[in-house]
Image (cartoon, rainbow, N blue to C red):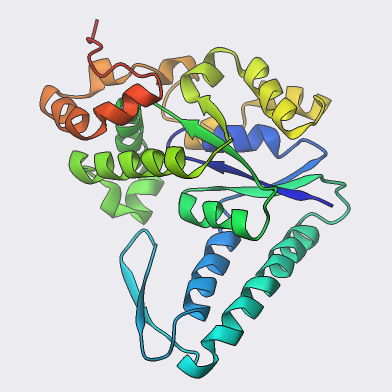
Length: 272
C-alpha cells in the first residue's frame, strides 16, 4: 500500500528543483502542484458547512462560500465525503502514474494547510519541510516576477511588497513548526551545498534506496533553465546582500527574525 509524501514550504524555496529530481525515482509518484489535495480539502470544508452558514476558505485570495448541504444532513454527509476523499485521491495517482510501482505518492504544495489536513485521512503521511532564508526568497520572487512570461500572466507579482510577503513566510513556517511532530526538515542552502547527501537523507526518511534515475536528474538540472533566477544553485544563496535595500531588509526582519532564528538563520548577519 502506497503512502502519501508531501513537500511543503513557501514558494521559491527550491521545491520545484527538488521535485524534478525526486519525480524520477521509480518508487515515487510525485506531481508538481497538481493541487488535487487542495481541491479536495476545500470540498471537505464545504461538505461540513450547513446551507445556512458561510465559510472562509483558506485560499491565496480570500474567498467566502455559502454552505450547500442542508443543515439537517451535514452531520451524516460530511464524514461520508471525507471517507471517499481518500479513494478519490489515491485513484488519481494510480491513473496519473499507470504502471509505476510506486511506494509513495504526493505533491509539492504551495499551500501547506491542505497537506497538513492529509494527516487525518492518512496517518502515515510523510512531510518534507523545505525552508530557505526569507531574505533570499524575497529577492528570488522579485527576479522571477521580472521574467516576461511571468510578468504577462501574473502582473500582481510585480513590485512585490515586503510586508505581505514577510507575514506569509512567517505564518507558513510558524504553522509547520507547531503542527508537525516529525517532519524531515531541510534547508535550501544545505541542499545546494551537498545535494546528493541530502537527497540520500530524504530517501532514508522514506526507506528507499538510491536509483540511477536520480543521478541523471541531478546532472540534467532540468528545472533551472525555466524556473531558476540565478546561473546555478550556489549563486542563489546570499543574494540579499546585493539585491535587497536597507529599508526592505529592516521591514522583513521586523516580522521574520524570530522564526528565522528557529531555522538557523542569523537576522543580525551583515552584508559582508
